[in-house]
Length: 118
Image (cartoon, rainbow, N blue to C red; front, side, top):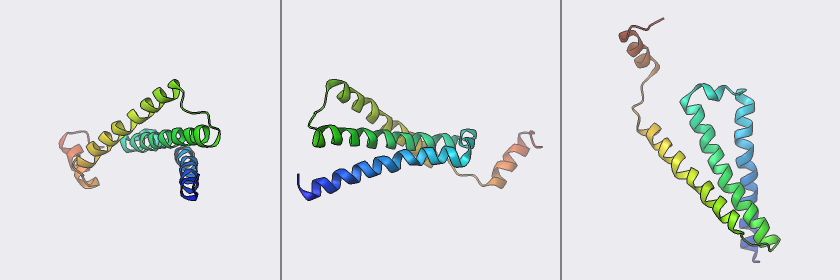
């Protein structure tokens, strides 16, 4: 294994650890309040999808490169299932980005017009 491959492998493993730490920290620091907003759900879903891909990649590196085990069929199927999450959360993010932004005062005005103002 070349030094570049070894460095790349360790970067993937380190990234997987950080990717798992992010949703854990998000849950802990918000005390679960992320569940109250659509953006909170999106952020958590996005972080979990990235973590799943990186953890799967790290497991593959450890099993294949370091242990010489290879890729069993069940792991290949798991990899497909994990990678399906990425286009889903990316499409969700695109929808959120393309949704027109409204300032808090614009949202308040819409609420008043609908007759449900506090």
